Length: 110
Image 1 (tube, rainbow, N blue to C red):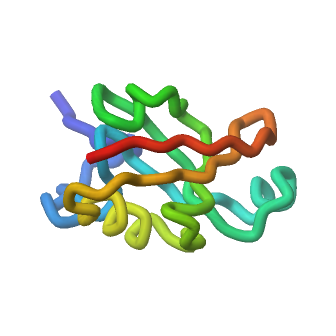
Image 2: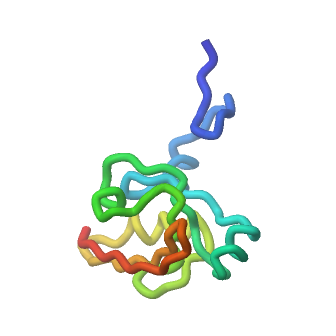
């Protein structure tokens, strides 16, 4: 039997590496230049997968792109996960671009 990670690879992934790409029940990937052009955006991070958690419960879907957190532009996966994992008891406002190109705002408390 061969075990593979979510990307289909067999290399070992450390807990630290996993935490860099995961927050609130979701994993994230960088948005490609082609996708940025198609969505008319210059920044953002795409939701790669969703499991039970806060982001799924507010209606986000795989493929949605988070462009801002609390009105701060998101440029990388690491920046996004740091923001989401270190908010304390504060509320969070996300600006997202859906797969259809619609701009939406979702808010929640932690």
